[in-house]
Length: 146
Image (cartoon, rainbow, N blue to C red):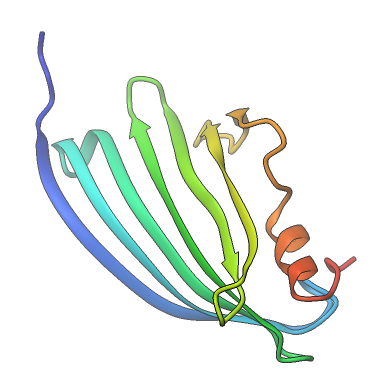
């Protein structure tokens, strides 16, 4: 049996801060200093990979700018893309939110399989949490905008 061997390993660290005014995401101004670390394993030609596995750590401090309330986010998940199936499979801990002193606020894990061409979810863990605004705005004491 033919097996692809990893051709390239890479580590990418990105730092940025989100600033979103009240009414666009939540009913309060929201910000989040963020760090995303991706460890990528590429199989096949790096410019045209047959398969890629990305181990991602997403770290952020979500802040309600109106009240100062904060929750720390430390999510870890793996994204696998395979050219043959044209699907992204995302598995991991999507919500791991704690207060700055370490009290657990929200934990959620699961799996998504997405068609990257259409963005449609082909499969997902039942009862997985709703969208970003539904979770973050609520744990920060507000509501999603709109």
